[in-house]
Length: 168
Image (tube, rainbow, N blue to C red):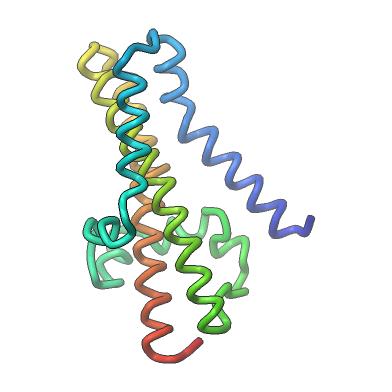
C-alpha cells in the first residue's frame, strides 16, 4: 500500500466516523421500527435510479457557482483531494476520463443514499422531540453528503469540459 492509499483510508475513516456518529447514536437509542426499514429501503431505491435522473438534480451547470459555495475548499480535505493528490491528476486520457466519470457516479449514488437516509432520520428525530440529535444529523448531512454531492457534480462538469475540448 502506498502513501496516497494510506492517506485516503485515513481521510475516509475520519469523515465516516464524524458523519455517521450522530446518526448511529440516534438509531442506537431509538427502537428500530418500521420507519427505519422504510427509510433505508426508500433511500436505497432512490439512490439507484437511472443515471440520467440523477443528473436532473444537479445544483448548477456552471462551475463558478460550485466554487462560490466553497467546493474548491472542500476538495482539499477529502479522499483523493488536493492535499493528498498534490497536483497528480487522475485524468490523462479520454479512457481515464470516462472511467473517472463512473467513479463519480458511484460516489454520487453513495452520498445520495446517505443524504436521503440522514434526511429521513433527521426528520424522524425532530418529530420525536430529539432536537439536539436531529440538528446534529442535519449538520453532518451537510458536510458528509451535501458537499460531497456538490463536489462530484463539480468534478463531473470539469471532466466533461476536458473531454469536450479534447484535452484528455
